Image 1 (cartoon, rainbow, N blue to C red):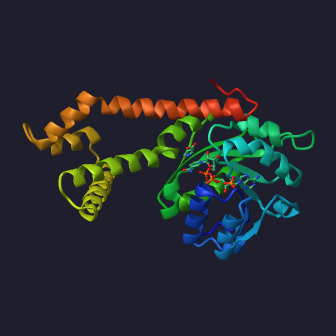
Image 2 (cartoon, rainbow, N blue to C red):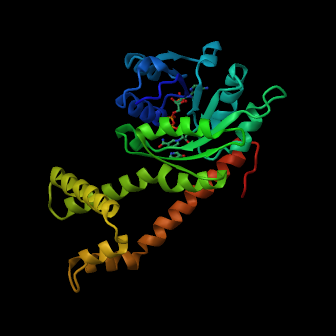
Image 3 (spheres, rainbow, N blue to C red):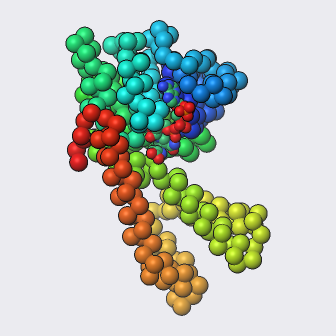
Length: 282
Ligand SMILES: NC(=O)C1=CN([C@@H]2O[C@H](COP(=O)(O)OP(=O)(O)OC[C@H]3O[C@@H](n4cnc5c(N)ncnc54)[C@H](OP(=O)(O)O)[C@@H]3O)[C@@H](O)[C@H]2O)C=CC1
Ligand SMILES: O=C(O)[C@@H]1CCC=N1
């Protein structure tokens, strides 16, 4: 990758870890990455990977052109207060926390001398670990096209990126692709359990399930035809697929998935109200 700027991750847990590993795989030199992390074991893990680490924000934060705020939403307000003294006018602050709005982040980071901090809200996902991530991005008012290009360049090193226009749409992205890998993992688990119940062993169950998901996903993304047409092509009249899809229809699979996504979206709004000081759009 060509973009070698200094990036500080505040919080080095699961999602930051997926981004960092993806960036390292793409050739980001470890010495350009710094992790601020309260957990000693996690700090030790990143130190072993060649990153610099610290247990709390300090003056060295000012040397990093980008901060990635990667703590839980409930920890974010306190973390921002700790980091704020080291904010420079050109520091880009990228928050990956679910729910907490750009307005809220701008209020927390702004001051009379820095009224328009460069805030970007991002919603990545853990397949970034294998460079197959999907990140939704939304930028605050002060963020220029040049800054956007910079952020996009970094995140596209670990997968695809899509820009959306509002906090509300980042919450929607959260419900689709942020939480989405967990829905897919749940479906994989269910299929593997189903395969074992039919008499296949666990190794076979995993191979059959994962290859089917990967193959179907690849076909759907390469095909010019709608997914529904691809589904119909598998479904022979009076055959096995039809029998399976009837059960899914009767049991309301589509409605269950959509209700689950609605719950994720609503939870993002709740997080903003519980842990931010901006009630958000809903
Ligand atoms: N996991 C995912 O798939 C995704 C997560 N996100 C967002 O990413 C953020 C992090 O989530 P996730 O990685 O899952 O959570 P983790 O708990 O795995 O990571 C957060 C890390 O930050 C540490 N931490 C807590 N307080 C501080 C502090 N004051 N300074 C430095 N480090 C601190 C935590 O330590 P300790 O555990 O000891 O508290 C933990 O190691 C969340 O806001 C979430 O909404 C976004 C997209 C996807
Ligand atoms: O579960 C969560 O809240 C975070 C945000 C998206 C994925 N994990």
